[in-house]
Image (tube, rainbow, N blue to C red; front, top):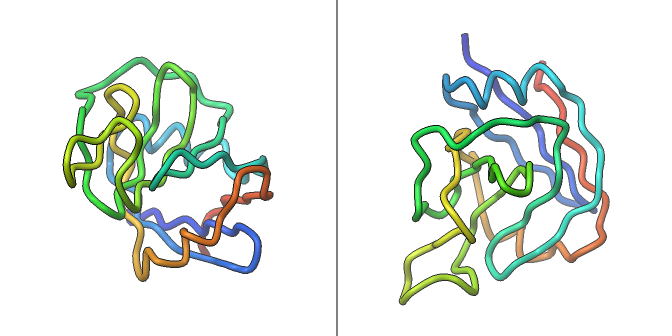
Length: 124
């Protein structure tokens, strides 16, 4: 079963396709989520009501990846380099559990600023 989510922040809306991981399933089960975004370079993250340990954690990711950061119990959207990046790689603060990928244009995430309301829902 495909699981798509909608991410709304300010005037932007994006969809993402979740993978089949246990972490992605846990996230799916707690939707909808509404909270405030925080930015960290080319990453947007925010706390979610999910508590999972690191599971096949990745130290680097690709543009458009979405992931769960276990130490912060946070959902992360990666669209560019972060302060931890070396060169052009995209490096989270510490390894993350992959959740899936954004579908569409990543440039819109550049408009998100810390404190903006973000809402994640299931797509019908």
